[in-house]
Image (cartoon, rainbow, N blue to C red; front, side, top):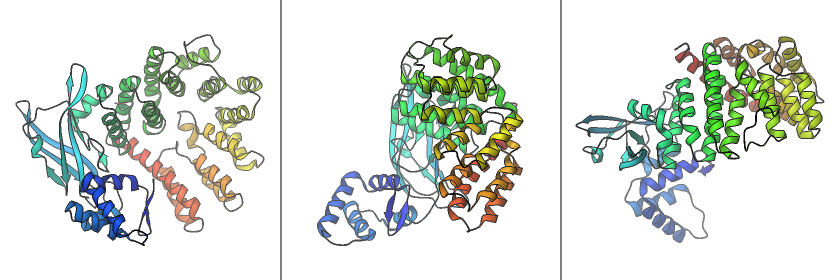
Length: 473
C-alpha cells in the first residue's frame, strides 16, 4: 500500500496508519476523524488539519510524531532486554536502534508479549502495551511477571520495525515456533527469524533449521509459501558455497520426511514436494525425484499434472540428472504455449560449460524469443545451487548489458538485466564490478540504474551473510 502525505509517497503507509491509530487510541482516532470530516466537509485540507483534530481528541502532541514518521526514512529495530530472578522478571526494557544512515528513533505504541508452554502449546501469559520513545524504554508492567519461554516485542503488530529475539527466545522458537498458538504471533516470529538472517545476525543454516523443524506443522498456507520461498533464497544464495552441498543434502532429507508425512492431497504436500525438488541435488535425492517424475514412486494424493512434472524435470536438469532428450519427451506430452515456456526454462538450466555459454549467448542475442519465454529462460538459467556455474558469466553480463542498453525495448532490457544479474556469483569481485557499472551508468538510464541498484543491494547482502558465516561449522 502507498499513502501520499503532502506530495510525498510512502510505501510503508499502511503500517504508519496502523501506528497512528495505536498512538492516539482507536476510539480517539475515530472521534478525531469524525470531527475532521465535519469541519472540512466539501473543502480542501492538508495533513496538519487532520493531525490537529487527532491531537484534540487524544490529547497527544503529534508534531514530533509526524516529523519522525512522515519525513524520515529507514526502519528501526526493536528487541527486549530483561533479567530473571526466582522465575520472574526482575527488570524488563525494550531497546530500539536505527541503521547508521538513517539514525531516527521513532516514538511508537507497541505491545510486548510473554509466551509460555502450557501442556505442549505455547500461549501468551503476559502482555503490556507501551509507548516506546528513544533508545531504551523500561516496561515496569512486566517486572514481577512469571518468566516465559518466548518474549515477543511488537506483539499484536501495532508498531513498524524489525524484531530481534533474545537468545533464549530464539532457542525456543528454533525448535517450537509451530507450537505457538496465535497465528499472528507466529507470523511475527517467522519475520523476526528471516530479518535476522537477511541482516547477517542469524546463520542461514539456523534459519533452515527453523524452517525444517516448524513449517511442516504450520497451519497457514500463505505463511508456508512465504517461508519456503525464503528458505530457497537462504539455501541458494546465503549459505556459503563451502557448505551448500552438505546443507542441501540435509535439507532435502528433512523435506522428504515431511513430504511423506504430509496429508495426502493437501496444499502442504504440494508445497513440500516443490521444495524437496528444489533442494534435491545430490544423487540419492535426485534419484527419488526421478522415481516420482516417472511414476515409479507414488506419493498418495500428489497430482502429477503437467505443472508438477515440469517442476520435477527442471529440478533434475539443474542437478545434472536430466537433459535435452527428457525435455523434448516432456514437451511432446505437453505441446502447449505453457509447455514451450517451461521447456525453455528447463533447457536454460542444462549444466555444462558449453551448454551454459550457448544459452547465455542466445538469451542476449536472439530477438525471436517471446518476452515471457525469455523471462522463464532467464529464471531457468539462474537455477541450481552451484555458484561456480554462475561466476564465469559475471563479467560477461556487464559487457553484454552495455551492448543492448538503449538498443532494445525497455521490457526486454529489464528482463535481461534483472533476470541474468549475477546474483548467484557472490564475491567481492562481482560486487565491485556491479558497483562500477552502476556508477558508470550515472543518470543516463534512471530506470535501469534503479533496477540494478535493487539487485546490487541483494548481492551485497548475500556477501555480508556469507562473510559472517563462512561455512564448515
